[in-house]
Image (cartoon, rainbow over all chains, first blue to last red; front, top):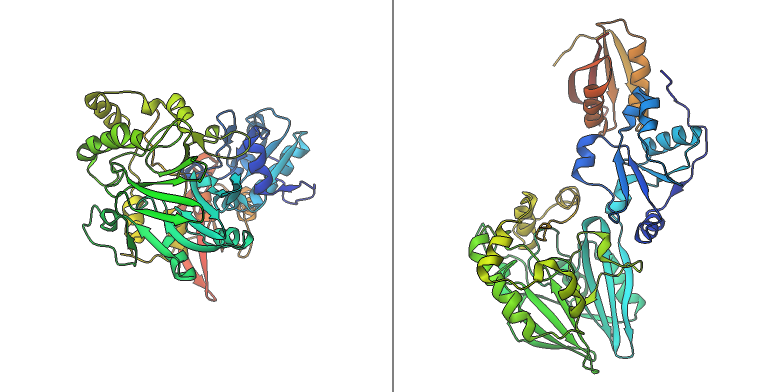
Amino acid sequence: MTITEKLEIGVAPRRIEDVYADLLQDKQRVIVDVRNRDDFARWRVDGRSSLQIVNIPYFDFIEEEDESVAQVPAADEVLVVCAKEGSSQYVAEILQERGINATYLAEGILSWGGLYDTRTVVDAPFGKVIQVARPARGDLSFVVISEGQAAIVDPLRHIDNYLQVVHDERATLTHIFDTHAHADHISGGPALAAETGAAYFLHPYDAIHPLDMLPATLPYNYLADGQTFQVGQFTVKVIWFPGHTLGQVNYLFTAPTGQTYLFTGDGIFLRSFGRPDLGGRGEAWTPILYASLYERLPQHVNDDTLILPAHFSTLDESAEDGIFAASYGQVKEQNEALKPRTLAEFTEYVLGNLPTFPKEYVEIKRVNAGLIQPDEELASELELGKNICALADA
Amino acid sequence: MSVTFDELLDVKGAKCPMPLVKSRKAVNNLGVGQVLKVVATDRGSVADFQGWAKTAKNIELVAQEEGADNGDTVYVHYLRRTK
């Protein structure tokens, strides 16, 4: 048995930002995750469906080096990932010695969990739409800028990312819009409001925890269906879209040119839509979701409306540019979940494709209602892994 | 909890993968049936030693416990060489 103890060979670490760019461009084809099997099962780096990711714990390399090396898929370059960094460097050096071109992820899987990716979706004379993604969670949020005014839709917990964008755009944050009370992640809305004094908006139906039946204890401004706002040159209209939650809304931003942008939250996604069971009332909420999808939504959009959702399930939903947005016309074509169905067919489809209900989601909704205040460790723990807000693939 | 052991390995301060690498070497130097006590400060060692013992050829994880050492939390693992 060979046991390598000294780390002698130089293997270069790779930054997560560079790895993410390669994942989007389908250049990173093989990842070897050397964490233990339980940790790997909980969460991992996600790429396009073409990415090969294998779990070979580092202690397998220590026990059976030959067998473990033989399990590594052939590739031009293999990225090794572990919890922090040390074990992936250790394994990358073993692979390098064996003639396999290996690198390792700097700071381990935590760097993937903490990655925020900021990209400009729209840059027009009347304003900008900037996407702020947290790829490990499949979470999307947006900053809209117009005439020095900024609005944020569905901000995530690490609010410095948004303050930076607003600062870089030399804008003043005036509106913080949550599309709904999120179950999969802790909202950055209340913290941004406290930090900047901007108003935080939420529909009142979502300010009651659906399982506890307890009202929110944090300050927010009520939204009503049809309510309008002005953000620079954009007119913003609130469209009530119940189903995923009872207080889910979509925000329709209309530019002076007539171009519209619909921030759908967990209403429709590019390839699916938000599941109706996270409030514990899937059967009762499914017909409400049906009415939102098939009756309410078409009244407010046209084929050119840009759909900007709060989640993606796979990097395949984005082009190489890393932007997760598409016209409503495109979404209708590519989204199997939106194809025409009767209510009976829809109910059968939805209730037959509900993924697991992560137990953390009940707790996260408590955080978002201000009912509990987690410390950083608990907040990170609650937000581990990818969101499961979409209906499963049929 | 007190588990009888034959050898003691102190890997406090060592980061992954070193607690496990050194434990492997130390187990190789045990006689069959003997027990190694490993004292680590790396919290990740708890799950990793469990995973390792499941597939390792000649190791039984007899017990794990948490303790304190000069204000640091330590993770103690008892490994028996089975063959």
